[in-house]
Amino acid sequence: MPLITAPYVAPPSTGEPPGGTPIPLPEIGYATARYTDPTGTVWPLTDWDAGWWTLAEGVSGLGAVSYDLTSDPHPRGGARLRHAQPQPRTIVWPLFVQGATHVEFLERWRALATAFTRTLRENPDGSRTPGVLEIARPDGTRRQIEVYYLDGFEGQAKQGYYRDSDSAIIQLWCEDPYWTDPTPQQLHRETGALSSFFIPYPSVSSSQVLGATTVDIGGDTTVWPTWVITGPASSITFTQTDTGEAFTLNPSAPAVGHGNLLAGEQVIISTDPPSVRFQNGDNWIGGINWPAASLWGLRPGPNDVTFALSGSGPGSAVDLVYYLRHETA
Image (tube, rainbow, N blue to C red; front, side):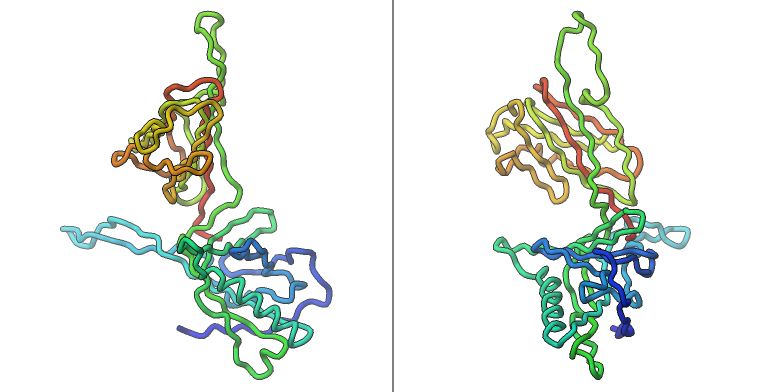
């Protein structure tokens, strides 16, 4: 692997406001950055006053996703693309760390190293909690990506370094190579008060009707939504009309045995990773109509979907929550 080096950059004589000032980053232009470690502690990466900051020269891995292409030979020559598989992303992020004394520098160096390597510690259940790298633009937009420490938090072994300053060329590995917008997108559909068709004639609006609707998805790739179902309801079916993919939740299924959802009771269905939880945390994954079920995603552009609630009444509702996903930072 080639060695990536970055020159010393002295901080300006005056401090910048909290959060730092936008710096030029390859592939995305001027931006500010911060890292949130698995404990929730936020580490600014472009703030001179913090005692460490990003070296713009050497930042990489913020551009378009890398794909592994699968093809089939074509009888007339060449090949035809069969599948494109997104590959994990590696981000290179050089940091310069300094202190007024060796002890201050060492405290900062050690704390930053722990903040990044903590992503590799196992939780009691055997899982690991990633950190989150966030890139913010001067216009206020932000994009995030989950990261795990891979390599690089070591000094440059240059004369005079590691006394009161040094730089680390950190490599961060990303399971999901896509960047996400941290602002959730939401869609709410609710059943209005039920009344006789004849007395009086009903008046309804799109925000009160469960049924067919179109969800227009921005971003660059498929999003995997979370569904929140609020009772009353005896059965709930979600259908992606364009593809025919569908899944049904039955609260009375033997694996669940709850019975109909009562007014105000909620179930949360996550499509990635697949999860079905009742409001108290009980696992209701057995209430899905496996193996026919498909917990489908929403592709960029318009998506025609249908929500069908049996046994619904006043207060029955479906909330769709998702985060836009992007190729680049």
